Image (cartoon, rainbow, N blue to C red; front, side, top):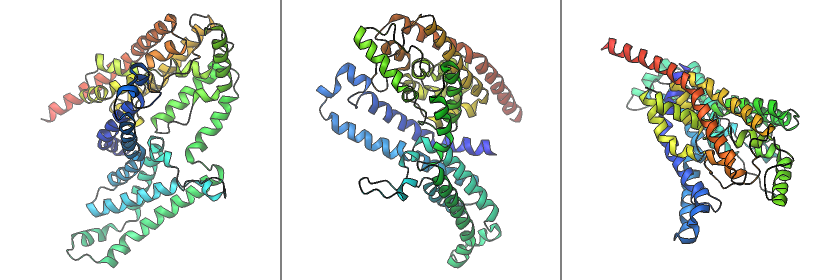
Length: 421
């Protein structure tokens, strides 16, 4: 049942997330000063209304991508309580209020005359809040299923002259329990973290990683943990470039002084191991997953999703609900999603250790294609470009057996459907 609820929620959100992804793609690549395509074609210098179009895309981005988690909480509660229209609406609206409560900004309690603090953690209304949106929707639905006076629903809904007192008596208890429960949860979270429940999960690991000495081992642990969180919709909280920021700056200073990235003092950092080569296309070596599905998958739904998101993934732009929809359609792909980047990290460490490739030290434009990140980050060394391509090929090969296993499942489902006919 849980699988069905999450799957149906993601299917309903699919067109909105897809449109939001392409809005994000256009804004980051073309209509930002540091966008990849803008830096190549200098769009800002010749396109009339460049800034106006950029502002318009920002408006759309914030209005679609910026509130997707709220829509997810609403839909999850609605699907969890499939009984009748008004019953669903009551649960869905309650889930929205509960989600807002969960994202109250604990820093608002702190008095600071010099700085205004928002009342809510608005970043969690976007994709980074999808995990808690699902939790809120599921719990709200469960509370309504448990405490809603179902025996009175029919009389309340079907009556032409609805009795307000009866409807209030029917809904007040589950609404009050839900809001009180999440109010207590939010208050307790604020005692430990002023910036939301997500950071209660990631901060201890982030601190452990930032003080790690065995970087390859730390990188493997970090990327597995990050990709697990990413699958659950807890995204954007692990910035590998920031963890080793001091070493990254040292590498950049060396490259500027010597005119080359070869011989940089810190050839192995989390940023180089993970961002430059292990996340090509997105978390889980997404580019390799999409290529393997397009090449050998027989699942029409999977191919539909992949074709829709392939272009944004080239520029390392994708969203967790889209990948989640792929994994739900073929759960076996979750295994290579976690393990393929580990293989990539290990191969990258070997290549850096034996000086087969230069470390990636230069800052890049926004939405730089994943396959080019290592190449451009090293100042254009051909070894890094070849290594990036080899990484994608190896990743695709690792995904293939799991795609073929998924084909067997698809074939069985098709046979069952044909037998039923």
